Image (cartoon, rainbow, N blue to C red):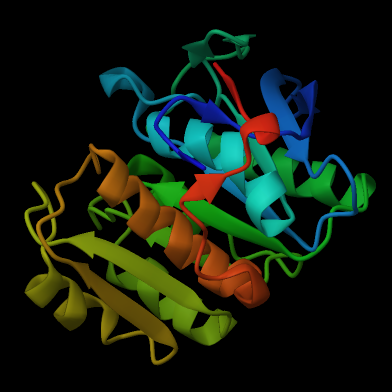
Length: 243
């Protein structure tokens, strides 16, 4: 048996998509769904800061799209927020610091509703966590997972609003994060009774390395499809090709 590696791409149906925002922009993206069955839940990815290299292909989200449809039966929707570029293309518009991006989040959720994608969860990373907290309180959303939340653009007001929203909130906080570490995170997220803060021992903000990637993907699967947890680390030879 071969081990799943950073370059492993498991079978899935993958298609380019275009999101349409209420303020008239087209955003480029991709939807990956299981190849042989309907998805059981949907992961809507909100990427890190585009002015610092964040995009739909940021490595945690790329690897989620490569693995989780096959391993966990999830739909993985990735897209570039306004003005962001990746191999898939460049979304229209310009970066707005997290404000006009509310239309981008709404467009992604509207896409899930229109296409019948089940049980959407927002999964934000860094800047994407702030978009989730600020603009993700939509009745369609079943919960949110925050990877390396800085709690800068989104602060106590957004946490209080999420507490009232009442949906699950999970924060994965690296022990060695550059912006917010576990002890401070527990204090900040105490405002949200339903929030769960998970300390990631030895991890840093960017979650570099396959062991760190597995931590993140397993925590996502634990919430979106517990029956598929924990994820396997090996695969049959026929199941793999490389990116």
